[in-house]
Image 1 (cartoon, one colour):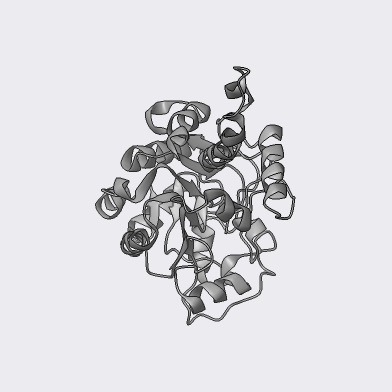
Image 2 (tube, rainbow, N blue to C red):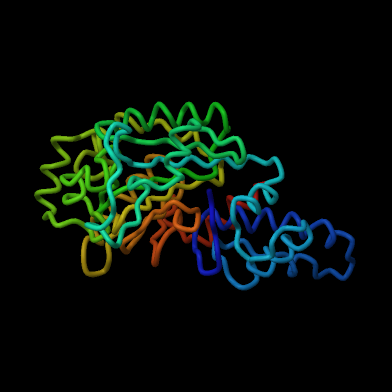
Length: 319
């Protein structure tokens, strides 16, 4: 349930780079020319050409399909029994609501609209047996309380998390968590996204969320966010991070940038880890290749430093 490829700029890429670096360091340890450190892959959170080539070399040496991308199979082999827990909170409709076609929302081939992967999640339980991943469905009416309970439970099984991801509707400064998605949650969709950023004004969204204060991570209900999701720093590995995959959560230069950055800074301060969010509209689908960011992202790191500095400092401790 992970897919990283060339062009990604994410904290979790730094974890991959460190794992690849550890693979490289063993043969380099036998060199005596004094240049071996320069030959090690740089840890900067940017999946560039050198990282892609290192992934290909690793896949080739371990008899994996040589794609240059880090999918779940490559991730498991790279981690090699190291702490590598991933938890994904997915805002989806209640199991009693019939799945509906996506004709009304053509930009969203959505998790809640009947893909096999959601059926698998709900049928087989929250903990994957094949990779160290927790799937946490957040249904209509559930929200921050459910997130806290299930993330804590996941950490009991997986240990400290490398990555905590949120999938669902969003708008600048807002991450849906129990708002519901799809045609069965028209109200939440119209206020929080549906692939196009929502049709409501910020004032309408604020009023909507104040009446549903446990169903989002947002500036508008921050007191409830602190109440339910504060004190969670212990769930993260020291190289852990958070990803918000809702549409426009980080905002853009033209719309919502201030709200988006305020939310990312608050969550980073609350949890003490980097937080990455989408700038553009997103899609989530029934295949792993869609469970990734579409287009530009923004990352805020603790203390206001750069992604490269944070990954170099924190991911280098991964061993």
